[in-house]
Image 1: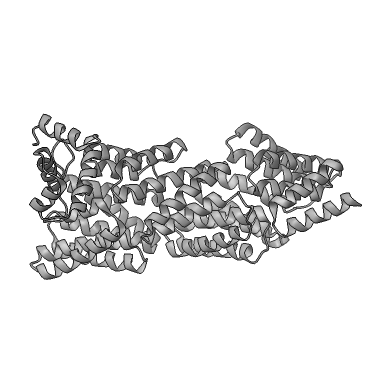
Image 2: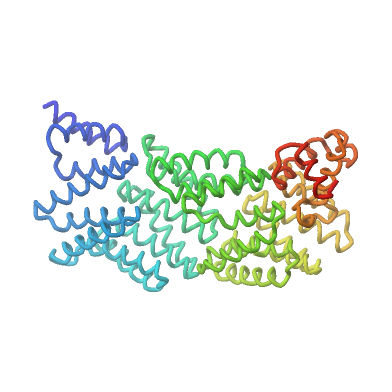
Length: 545
């Protein structure tokens, strides 16, 4: 009687999504008397949601054997499918292939056209997509979604529809793709899907929205995912990815300190949940925030950490090299990354960085080429954020080419787009370009208003690198040859090497002591030194004093 009561309590806790307690009660009942197959699958789900991957696979294998012993080939095939998929995601190709092959054999043996045939189309969708056959992948995903719809299997429909939507976005059929993502999410948010499938679809849909550069949709579904995670306090699976998405939204909206904290928590939780892809994205995001704040050494370490997790640290690392005064390294890195990347959505941020780096190097031909391809991608995909990025780059390229009127028009479009997206940093950078164009067109009052507005926003954000640029009369100071220092940083270094205090330097250059301290931090990072004494010695050794 006591055993039965414990089992019932475990089932109740499972239904309430109290994963830790349900796991404890069901495991206890299983030790006393082996669970029946339905309870065994429930226990497996608890293990998965708690981040116990190996236990989850072991329990699924037990459930698979129990279904086969009972002659239920269809459900045995379903268990084999999930074992194979998870092994594939872990990189265990041989065992994954074996389990998926077993699932296919069982399905072929079963009578009729069961829903499991639809599930087994999904690995083929992934294979075709990875091989570049996007049309074939979309067609197969559509077949699987149709099977799920006909059979009333919400899990299969949501998995297949969201995958088909993702593939359509990659094929530049963005409107159709987003519609399918939304439809898949209706099944999830209405509670029709199982817990594991709900988490998979949540994360997959948000990633696809980001690839479509639809940040509003990504923000809406991220908020929904956050609520879903918060309703399950024990949850470990999916929570690392959820925190990454939240940090990305925070960064876009200018909450950089909060984004940095959330990204650190995301990294820790992703490691706990053995999600190295999410851990890599968390580290990369930390690098981005550090770079924007001028914390170059911290950015370098974060990008290296991202690489250790398997996340390509571009374009952030190339932009970091540019900020460090290493334009050749920046150009080489971004060109290499572009050469390896064929997908248009993934090329877009690389192209934007390539154009920005090329403009600063004075290579207008390369900048124009990158800008043209970026605009072509933006025209095909038509995401609000992608359009804003392309307009920002067009403005910078036109200004560098001396066409202030065209640069002004593009930069104003960019500023309006970024303001509409509630992206203060990007809006401020666009307004710098507006100010420079106004100055070139003979309107110094408008220029000062734009530059002052940008300066205030950048100061609030702590965007040190961009603030340093603003202190140059033209807004974009060149790096000193061979040392990577701006002209203002060279002035500070010379005064420090002459023995001046921060207060003396501030007075001589008519800037604040806080700004002097910020310049010194940048000088230390770029020269690879850690003190005023070492910086002074460097200045004397390299004839900069």
